[in-house]
Length: 399
Image 1 (cartoon, one colour):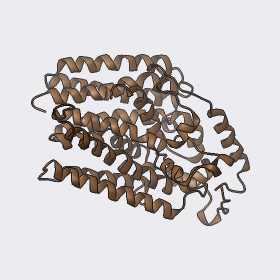
Image 2: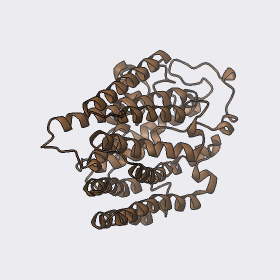
Image 3: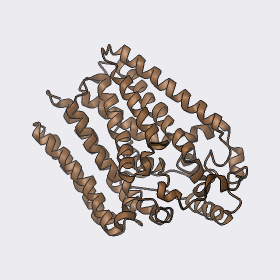
Image 4: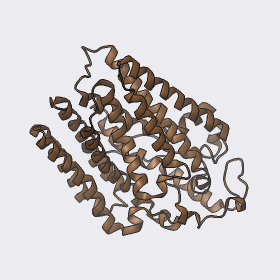
């Protein structure tokens, strides 16, 4: 897991922004009613939005050759083709006609967003203190892979699939080349994929509970809880993402707390104290999600979205963001000192320092222009901090 921690960090921030927030009730007032919307063309672009199409295409062309490099020797780099299959970029023009249907369906589930979940499961396994690469081979390794498939391709893939379905109308305006508004994926396709991933995920959870001899089906309950949160996040009447704070926190917890719970419950005992600590770390994840809101502040303001930068302004929001990210990591470090794991606490403090340096150097001076530089420079250390905390929990005899 150490090898691609930098990739995971840059992917985490992208994953946080890939589950897009639709307009709130107020925002929908700025859009025409569904009955008044003009029919979609085959490619899903409204006939009266040619200028927006040109803007989207121009941006896609401009970004297709971009690469992101951070402090980890270029592990954050990637070309446009790879990013499309991972779900981070969309296919446009004649190129879209050549993409096989199975690739489009994979793109719909956004495999790139599975990486942070994989890391979360590994952290939970480390925190259990009972995962053994050699002594437990092949049982521990195979069961951890099954848990990764449960948390990543199955449940995260399900979440991304239904999220795109409930965002299809706003995507037809903002991102008409996405699989659903472009017409390459139908409602039937979405239903088959979502139900299939959900059934497979529950089957894996049930089998893991049985294989580990759990008297209480902990993994199955975590899977059910995660599914409910996923549905409430995207679908009416709940639509948590319509409320910036609730939606953003639910997103952060889904990428940090829930996979950790699954990994730790698989190999050990998941206590209320550890659940609270991971939820605290999820607040730092909320800060990561807010970082992505700065680059879309103009569009959010136009559509009436109440993101933090829109509500408080860039200057105030950037300090709230860094305070959220740093403050809750400091609370976790204090907790580590409190349970007697001072060396792990010191290691976590050491990993917070370069994050603060990156904030001072990149984020605070210009959070809009430097958001990618900041994420590439700071978030590998946040990710390693999560793993450090997991090792501390696994090392501590009382946790």
